[in-house]
Image (cartoon, rainbow, N blue to C red; front, side, top):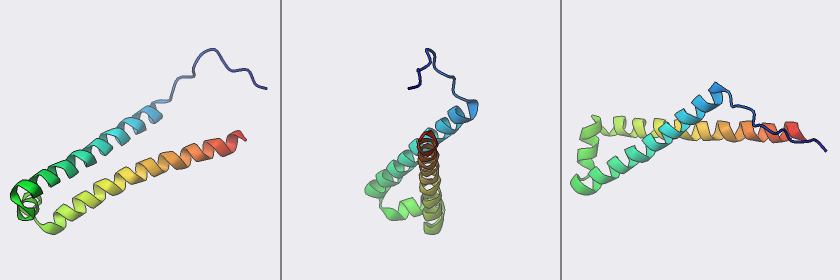
Length: 88
């Protein structure tokens, strides 16, 4: 059995930066979906489409933000799964 060290190894800057970016993009997606929902309820979908400059621009922005967030969370999951396999 391996003895645990008494101090915690500091995280690398890349991990901290990646975690911060992932959190910021996640909250940006949540905020954007909230804004879209608010305007859709208050003024209708036409105002949302006009706000983004057209219905396809709105769709592309939302899809890109959601895809970027999902990709970052999936990348973290894959890296953590790799870490578990290497420990065994």
